[in-house]
Image 1 (cartoon, rainbow, N blue to C red):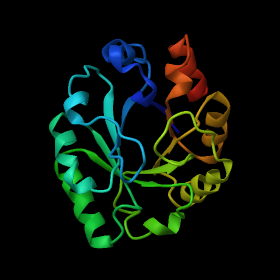
Image 2: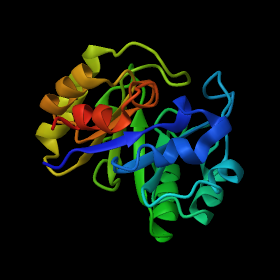
Image 3: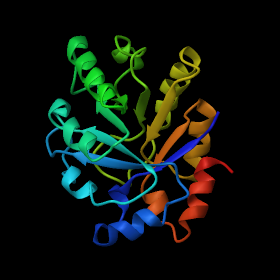
Image 4: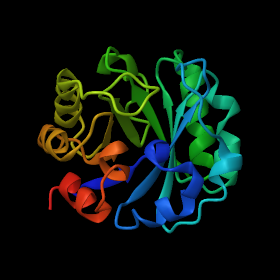
Length: 211
């Protein structure tokens, strides 16, 4: 199983964003952590900022927002390849399917995220329709939190029932927790401070990937 590493620019230096992105060129995707100050207590950037990023890496928008349906167009317009919304913000099956269809219709992949306290059964209605499931291993909103080991049970559950699924994990990922996540079955590892806080970012990416 190929392991992808996705640096989250939440921990990058926004004053020199392009050079920060250039420094993680050996990664696979770049994650845009989009926060609205409502669904999560923090506030981050939107597509007007992200559109200036120049990279060959695929952009991955993690929408930690209360109204993802109102935000997907701005990210699709700038060429975002992967868009993930939270199960906790879109609760009914009809709305979830409409959002997934809207994302896929524009050529992006659609993902659904689960907070640490949300069970896998919460997404049984759309698990066959999404391209990716994001397991949050911290409570969303802030970088630098400690990894919650119990979420690995959800990764194992998903991997057992869906052997070909892209399972992304985000929160407190470093060389050690990445190893635990890979062994549980995650194949897309999001890291923020463990990469952007490292002096040798290529090495940090290799360690998270496990090679």
